[in-house]
Image 1 (cartoon, helix red, strand yellow):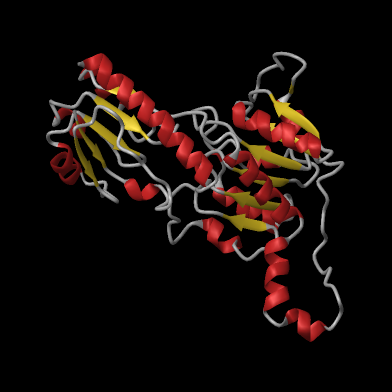
Image 2: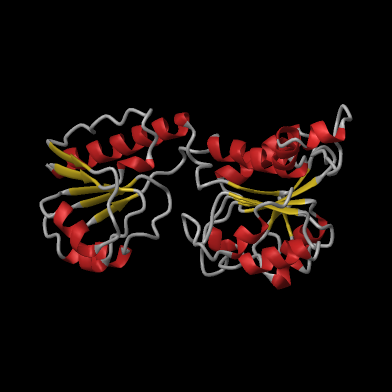
Length: 314
């Protein structure tokens, strides 16, 4: 079968991406613009499209009569028209479970950096501030331990659960939030509003749905009585950026650390850029998932899925 990989550059160059068994004709592009005509031209004779974030719309799917499979190199499937896939008998596969080590570790990297103001301290250690002060150490920004803090986790899938396991090793109390407006389903969960009120740190790991769109907003922030740090490794649109900026400036929250944003890369007018130099703000470019080990595991899972699909289709 013929396959087209539309955005290979979403992987590190150091990761070897061997051609899945069964692919006889393989075209690889480092990147593909979200331009319908270009996508159709590149995929015109393809049986299989492999992509991470390229938008595969109804118009694209309708124009590709040979297309049998869209294989995503990610878990989220928001960039593909699933209804059009069903209507044109095109299979849609994603990849799950590859980043259960990478994302939780990145989460704690963000968390520790913000709680200990590491971005700030790196700057003052290297920009001449330390030399000008003369003391052997600087403590102008408070340094907060994780031990003894309460971590509220919104999103209790594999990644959220792993974050909770690591948090307990740090000596934290862990609360898993029930869905907003719902009673806790069992003793493992805590009422959503209680989690907001009782948490020193709130870590977001939920999918983006109608229920979680702008979940963190003026109203929910107002319920955060302990002035928490908010960590977002879910999706950018789970939070309202304007609300985050306002809450930080009004000292309703301690800080904000995020790997995900409404526009990726940042739009030039994104309100969050206005707080980028705050000592407890840290942004990373949607790479929490991307340790070398996670990328290799992702491709192993993908290759197995694609090869199985080809064998079953012949």
